[in-house]
Each structure stands twice: as structure tokens, then as C-alpha cells.
Image (cartoon, rainbow, N blue to C red; front, side):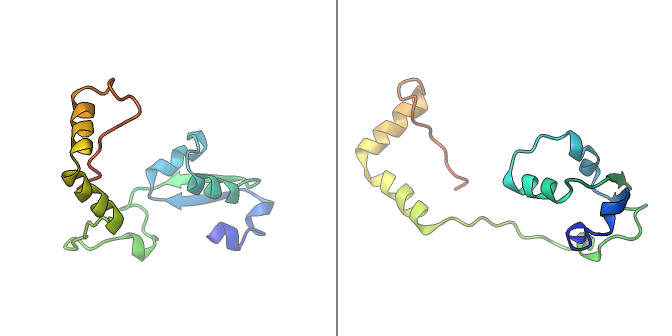
Length: 121
């Protein structure tokens, strides 16, 4: 966001981005696979920059929001739309679907266009 906001300053020379994210060192060597990566790469087009990695202990001037307290517990949750739950419960009542699922689980080649997953439930 800083590069986007003050773009007129780094356009005139090389600048260094100091980070504690080691994976950013390899940013220019990575294949872009998602739209988020594409948007991020577009913001740096035409700029002369370098990522400088420093481990968290050495990188004293870091964003306080990127650090967590030792005793903090993070919640893990997953949003499951109600319609998915309804579809899955309807499978239990439908004998044709039960037979299809059993056949796909036994031999995937029987129905190559079908796949069984549990969706984390």
C-alpha cells in the first residue's frame, strides 16, 4: 500500500523493502497463479526495487499488527453455507445417490466424471 500511495518517490530510483517474510526474496522467481498475486505484481511494474530479508528478531522496526503475543490463541473456523449442508443430508435419504457414491468410492474408473469429497465436514 505504501508503494501505491507514494509511487512518485520510488519511480526515480532504486529502493529497498525490508521484510521478515523470507518467501518474498523469491518473489520475482515465482509463477503468478492467482489474481491477488497478479494485482500485487502490477503495483511493482516499472519500479527498481529489492527485497531485503531480516528475521523477526533482527527486524526491529516491524508493524506491531504482524506480531502476536505468546499466550494468544487463534480461533480456526470454516464457513459452510446452509445449502451445502442440505444437499449433503439429502444424499443420506436418496438410495440412487448412495449407490452412485458407493460405486465411485469402489472404482473411480466406473464413473470418470464423478469424484467424492467430504468438504471438511
